[in-house]
Length: 389
Image 1 (cartoon, rainbow, N blue to C red):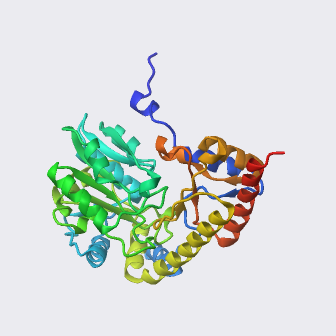
Image 2 (cartoon, rainbow, N blue to C red):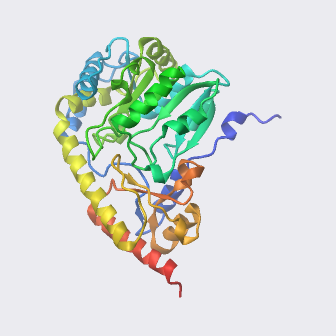
Image 3 (spheres, rainbow, N blue to C red):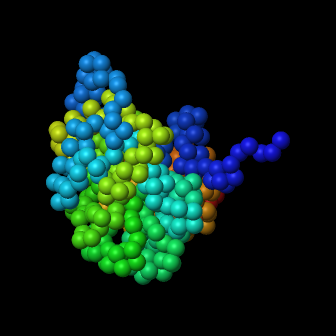
């Protein structure tokens, strides 16, 4: 019998994040700083709305695009935050998390052989989604000296006649890097000149600590060529509710909706009702969580300086990406030894692309107490590496 499994699937590498997460679950007294999941509970008023929807028997399918009321609230949110209006009827799609939106955008826009530029280090789903859509990923290796910001010259060098899409993963997972308005303006001229479309993954847009987050859709000529992706998991601590959305020109959104129709039908109804409440009354919750994350971010940067661990200062998401290359170990070796000897789980930088070698990702979506305990163990580990017995 021939092998029944698709070669395209078997050639995909499994997520490098899950490996250490699975190990730490079986290890007593281990601390995991590896998973990007808020340690906050979903705010009660949002949970109450989900519960109320169940009590009222709202367990039906919604339209494929999602509840009209939710799409209307998303339209208001994007307008208020970025000054850009999307038609709730034709330009907004509710998805099962931001990850489904990424998958749908790739499949709706890529034909076999089309090239999609992916800056790395970045979220693990971009390249697999591109490959499964038949696209050809072209990786740009971002550099710490540039604070992992995509540089205009790097983008120009990656463009070929086959380039169709660019992924903009900012604020960035795993580095915490951001792009400010001037960075985006420099890229926009190149994007428009070369007739490239953009997938802008802004799931961490509410977790920006330097100044107000600016989306590329707010710049002239970019709404028309961008799939804007966002969701509720990170900002509202709603990871398990599995709810995201995409805003795009109607000709793109209609094709994404068609794919969503066949594969998913609709996003969870209970989650959609909860999300309406989140957008209407959750701004205070977001601000409170953002301030807590910022406190943890500043604490980590201070501790890194004290222990001599090199790390550029990130201003977005809830990750830091310290450099461990001076210790003469690969990222994988460093994380493996740290977990084995000190029971602290981090994620090797290589889980997010080959240029992540020499770095590790630490999530600060954990309590200060957990961070303090973990950092004490990391400090001991680094001292032992510097002064072996």
